[in-house]
Image 1 (cartoon, one colour):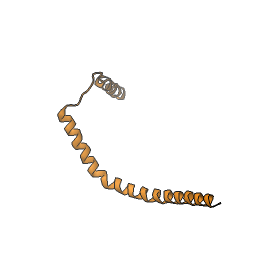
Image 2 (cartoon, helix red, strand yellow):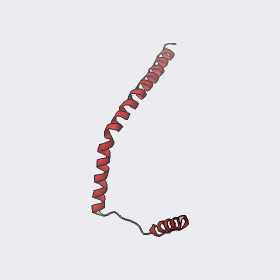
Image 3 (cartoon, rainbow, N blue to C red):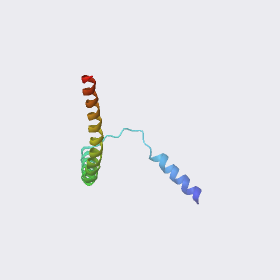
Image 4 (spheres, rainbow, N blue to C red):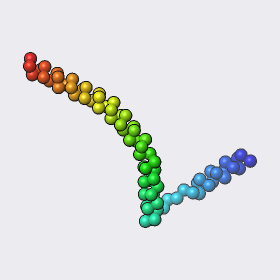
Length: 79
């Protein structure tokens, strides 16, 4: 029984493959855009909070690094 089910699934996968190029229609493009926009609206708050967290941590590190470099340049100019 399991073999029969396995071979049936394998046959279905092989038959479902196509070699012809698929070009989206105007209606399918509209549907894709609508689904994409809905997903973006759902995940936007999560992405914004991640960006704020990453921006805070990266900004501190970057500003410290820039400050160290500028301080070293000033010391080099004075010497």
